[in-house]
Length: 316
Picture 1: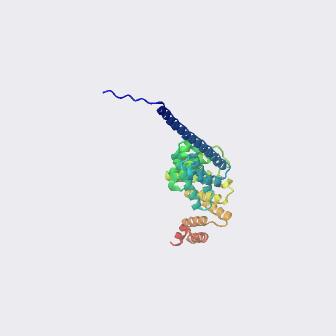
Picture 2: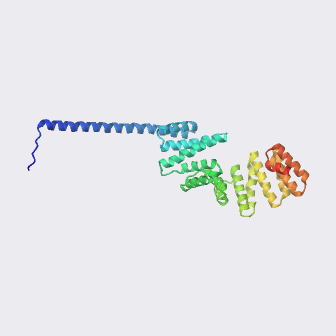
Picture 3: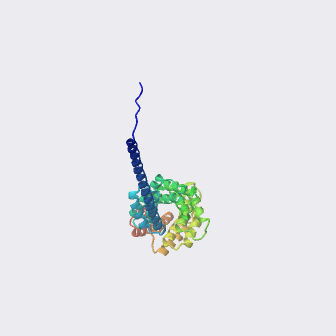
């Protein structure tokens, strides 16, 4: 059988063409609206990004933190907003007096920066890794391994910051990798022999002392750093800490007279120090002078009623 041929008149052709014109116009309208919407959105986001960066660069950390948090409420995976939020949270955290407030900001910093790493991986994230590593250090010794991990990643990207090596050294010491700790501190000490921070000098001395005990070696390499701190520091607390550590080394070396002199200097400079009194008591006890030792321990407890070692000695 032959199929019947169908013929269409002019009216059909006109309606057919008209229908497709309407479809085309409607599609064009939707496309134009979408393009305009994207352009408007890009302009808005561009302005927001510039404003966030301007606040951050001006050191307005509170404003940058709040602005970025507001942006994240509508764009939770925006890399720039997450990064600015994390960076500003870190700065606000280290400026707090209350440790719980500090930890709250530091936790926010970690949350934002870890989320930023998941949302996008730019070619250079050195600064992000650097801030994240420092944040983990501030969270405490239990997170020191993560601090080392992210600080090493920042280092591998050739990110430059003087305190990167200080934080690396402190973090290595927290995980008892004392050789790496000393090597990291040395990176800071080498460029400038003067103007080193008290924390740096005391920290590298502690690492040398810990390494010496761990390897059953001499503690002598720690002494020059403690003496440098004593000679150059303007902070009485740092000087006292350095003298206590220096006297500890002298005691282990058998230089009891020199150690006693350091304890007396601490008492002269501070007007009284519980740890110095306690250590003097230990020194007199080792000589067999129990009465004098107990007198020093009592002085320690009067200054610091919760000094556990002195209280234990008095209860013996």
